[in-house]
Amino acid sequence: TGSGNIAITLALGNRACEILATDISNESLTLAHENAAQHQCANRISFLKVSDPPLKQDYINYAGNNSFDIIVSNPPYLVPQDVVQQSVRSHEPHSALFDLHASDGQTYFKFLADFVDHFLSDNGLAIFECDADRACETAEIFKLRLKTKSLNVDIKKDIYKLNRFIIITNRRF
Image (cartoon, rainbow, N blue to C red; front, side):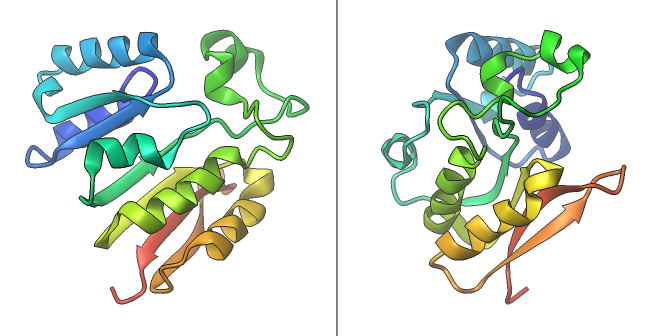
């Protein structure tokens, strides 16, 4: 969730949606809630503190058997040896950038694959930002871990033509 930019943008773009925004940091959740209140959409965003690394049980306790139509995440995916611009390093919390649980930067994507498999609705869409150099590896994690065989996993490029996003959709649509 960080400062809430993604959740707030989605809430402002579709006034009928309800949003769950999660983070491992109480400070980030507080800031995101304040920003949502400033943009008059806090009543449609639920803020949930989750474990680090995340646990599916955190979400089951919240959502039960409900599903999500859209799942969006920009998880920590960098590893310590990755080159990161100083302007990014100085403005983002270390835990928002770096996967501190595995040397391959894939901890959160393994969780997200299981999460999508459990919670994505039949007509759902999932979008995840990933490291351009590891996009193929990240997509493969989703392909291997998704038990719902009707889901399609694609890699999309960003505005700089770098492989930056993992897109998961239902093949029937």
